[in-house]
Amino acid sequence: MKIGIIGAGYIGGTLTRRLTTLGHEVRVANSRAPETLTELAAESGATAVWAADAAQDADLVIVSIPQKNTPDLAPGILDGRKVGAPVIETNNYYPQQRDGKIDGIENGTPESVWVSDQLGAPVYKVFNGIYWKHLLNKGVPAGTEGRIALPIAGDDADGKKIVSELVDELGFDPVDGGTLADSWRHQPGTPVYGKDFGVDDTIKALADATPERTEEWRA
Image (cartoon, rainbow, N blue to C red; front, side):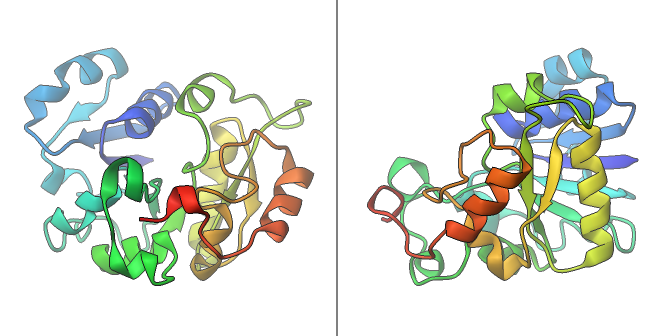
């Protein structure tokens, strides 16, 4: 696939490395000039581009930037992707640690619903709860004992199938996390967040989640 990645931090950079290794054609951007990604591009084989060009003709786009920076992305930044190309967003709201107060989220809007509203496009929430080193190193073939499961929230079944296949290709078991409105079930502070659960424990943890934000994850 042609994959555009906006954001080259721990998760975005790791996905750049993993996806190029799997043979995907990756265009990666950060908030600065492509020249600042020369090292990542040389290491991975990805093409460094301006953020405005990352989604051009993409079969799938990944947005992996600090939550507070989402409104700063250029309007229509995803418009160049192919019709029906899914948009994955990997991030979390860290009000005390990084992002400051975002009123919509504090008032109960699930984080990824807020991101979708800012981007003006449907998104799928996945990769937000796994430690980046585990994303880099712990993917294993399907059927391997102890394989980590990753929940995926999103509204369109066809897009979710594409995202699920990508998760499986990366070496993790995809778990249907419900609609985007259900994506709070794997926000920070929930039972599944940051855990390397298998499928059964992931399903249970999603079911056990409650929508109230814990103290650590409120502004």
